[in-house]
Image: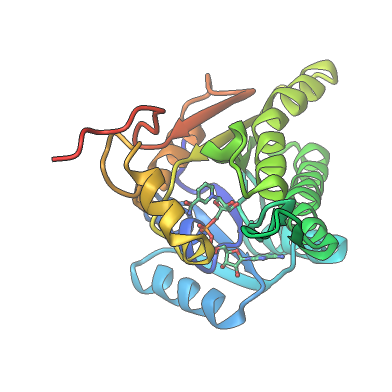
Length: 264
Ligand code: NAD
């Protein structure tokens, strides 16, 4: 698909990977709609895209709210007359063990709260569902060609301490197969679905992780450093441009292995 002149909506586009994706697509000529829960961040990203010569608008839109997602997609259609690229990027973590025991007594001293479990499911899973559903309704009804993209994670394989988060990210890697299959059944042949699984990338979300655990995990990364947000954004652009990428998940992890580099 030719990206120039297309219309893209990025949830969680006010920071981190979403910001990089918004700016990267805007630089390629995509007209961008930034959704996020933090208004100043939305305004900053929109202003920076415009200052760089791109086109963008933004709106406070919480992915957990049906009406917000409908309004965000309508903003794209009303402002730019179309909707072609939708990245369900907004995501959060609330890490912890399901049950944590006291070192001395061996008894349970803390649990993952129901609130922390549900919040991550709500934002990462229900949020992506509402994002893609509201987008797909408008794309199908108006015959807008395009691509729906979810953000999974290398942690889709199951990261200890992230029962809630890994659950949502495993799901995100499955959705392209399920939804591309749905569209195929209904002869919706001009909307593709794909996902990107980033490795550990240099954004604010990592600040909420256990830093010792992160340091240890990085020893298993062949690349030897965090993945840059621009490297994830480049994978998104590749998906958009390549019509053969469909029903699939692409890993951009810097080579996260289960082997540890020898200490120097
Ligand atoms: P981030 O915390 O830097 O940015 C997330 C953005 O989403 C923020 O701007 C935040 O305000 C917004 N947001 C949070 N809750 C929202 C809601 N309810 N509705 C709308 N917007 C909301 O995070 P990031 O690292 O850029 O992560 C982006 C996506 O990439 C997430 O889905 C995350 O799970 C995934 N991911 C990140 C990494 C990484 O290492 N950074 C790795 C794998 C996957």
